[in-house]
Every structure is written in C-alpha cells, then in structure tokens.
Image (cartoon, rainbow, N blue to C red; front, side):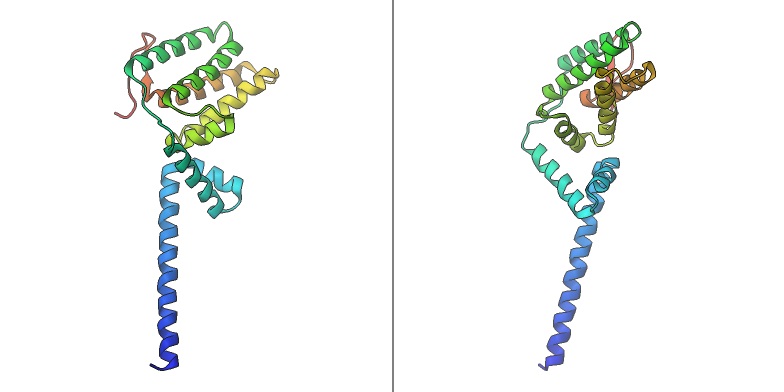
Length: 189
C-alpha cells in the first residue's frame, strides 16, 4: 500500500467515526429533550452549554435509579387526596396557611413515594426525572410559599400557588382528583 492509500483509509475511518459520534450525540440529545421537555431547555439555559446540561440530566437519572420510587397505594392516595381536599377548602378562610399546608403536604407525598427529602433544589431536580412537565409547577408554587413567609405575596399569588400545587399533587399521586368527595381516577387513562 502506498502512503496516499493509507492516508485516505485513515481519513475515511476518521470521518466515519466522527459521523458515528455525532449521530450518537444527536440521539442522546433527542432522548433527553423528549424525556425532560421544558426542563431540558431550563437546564441548558442555566448551564450555558448543551454538553454540561446533558451531563446534569444524566446524573439526575442515575441518582434517581438508586432510590426506590414507587406509586402510592390506593389507601395512601385516598388519604392524601382527603388531606388535599381539606387544604383546598381552608383556602377561602386562610389562604396563607393553605399554601403553607400545601407545601408540607406535597413534601409528605413525595417522601411517601420514595423521593429523598434533601434541600428544595435537589428535590426539584429529583422530581424532574419522573415528572419533568410539572416540576416547574413545584418551583413556582414553592417560590410563592417562600415569598409568602416573608410577607411578599398577594391573595392572587397564593391562588396561583394552589393551582400549581394541585397540578403537581395530581401527578405525584398519579391520580386526578375530580370531586369534593375525593374520588379520583388515574391520570394515565
């Protein structure tokens, strides 16, 4: 073989290898973007780099795989749904306490599912693996609850927090709460 033939073969192999790496990276990006939805874009914006963001999302998935995240039993769902109903009913008379109670109740439900109770940012990151489309609800509602403790919210803010907590709560329970009688149905139907 001549030197030019060897160079051509090496270049062809390098081009094929580069194309394979690019194809694998594109596939990985597509999978992560599909799985995490808007959370993918939020992490990319925060990290300022797609590779770093994808590494963060990969590490979240690996972290969650170590835990025993489970669906709640029907009894647990019923009990949490009843407690949620009480929290909602109290909103009219005491919106501030209702938001604080909603924040505590969602944390109890998450803990019952098997999510570790680390600081808020870690909890939100953990939740984003299984509930990427509603983790933003958790962030918004929790932010309002924190601002409320400092006296920096309006009743409208508190109402919005309850809406966000409800959306997250339904996903955490894997149920849609449909009536005051605490009937519920699978949200996956």
